[in-house]
Length: 398
Image (cartoon, rainbow, N blue to C red; front, top):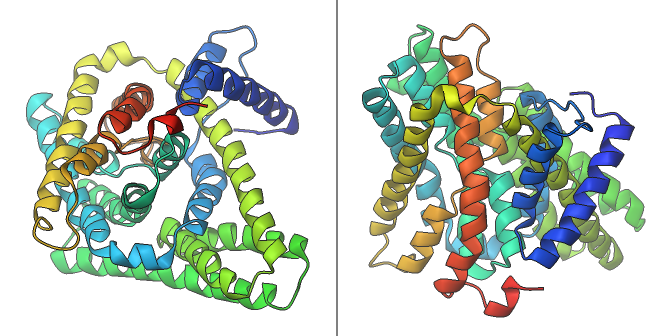
């Protein structure tokens, strides 16, 4: 997609109007953006926007991940790191397995199509999850569990996805190779983030200019992501690591008081801009997908993704029932229903090889799952949070 300045200005104008209307109608902002995007696609003013893997990965993911990581306190993350990592690893494996097996047996998809589908639909999307939960006013441990898991499980999904594609194209895959690939991708991404984040901390520690501090954090967000992706490592984990470093170490004196306040405000605005663009573009793309041609696989995928998520969450949380990491049943319900799919799944689907059999069907099914996730789950997550007592009633209105 060519995002020239005219298109960006028009999209941001539309997003601002949607934001004000959604607030008055008490409609989730992300849902309003997707619905508006779908309406734009059928209007005489269609922007002919195209959502691509490159656009999502290069432009949208780094700032959203960095902004979320900037707000995470390391001490709180450490307290719940075990359940978060369990959900982000074993949980993704279980969810992918349930979805892949179901698609193979229920809709007769070949394993070469069902396995990649299961993997790319298994990871909850940090873009959708963070935007929705922030808007709903979720705070405390539940916010940390949901947002941190959605950020960490990208590493698992990326490795599984590359392995699945290699296996379906005839490449030899061994257990040792899978384990090595996982370790290299995860720890290599973390190392890239630590290197870039550490370097930026040294830089900002030598200045009291808040504009330089803001610019340095922008370099950290995109630089860590691009460096990791260049070496086929986890860009999400790299940016997450850089954000955690700057968010936690920056408060110890590397950033000035004014600089830290300005950095937080700047990234909140950037997150608003990027979320506005990505969900409008998702809506525009959704409107052009021929859902009727894959109705049965789409419905099956939606149900299987929900089932896989439920099995993964309830199953993983059983291991912590008698420990200090126990997750309440109400929070488990939110983890299941709040496991939204969005831009990440779309990016992986759009990045499938052009000559892969069934590619277009898989892309359309993925968009169907994303549409259900963003619209149906997005519309109902706040009422569910309120019903289960996970947010104060006043935080659902404004």
